[in-house]
Length: 86
Image 1 (cartoon, rainbow, N blue to C red):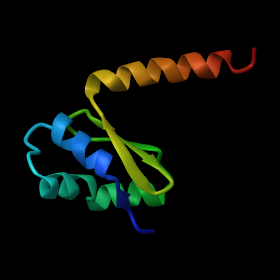
Image 2 (image 1 turned 60 degrees about the horizontal axis):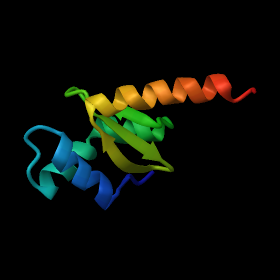
Image 3 (image 1 turned 135 degrees about the horizontal axis):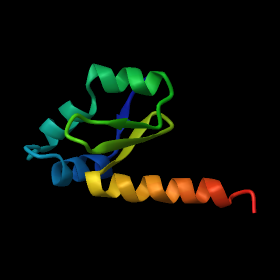
Image 4 (image 1 turned 120 degrees about the vertical axis):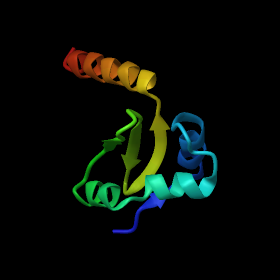
């Protein structure tokens, strides 16, 4: 499976991952072997060692969430899952 990294994900990586100051660095971080394997296994997200989360949809990395944003998303997801049956 070919891993696609969106322009949006590259921009967010440059904003949210410390030390990532160029598109080349962002692409290198977002396309490691571990991330390729996670996509092959069907992962919908991968958490980096620095705490940011890569969001994956249909084999594409679509965005990079900050550590703070991850908490908001997790809370929202739990809330939505809880209230779906109503």
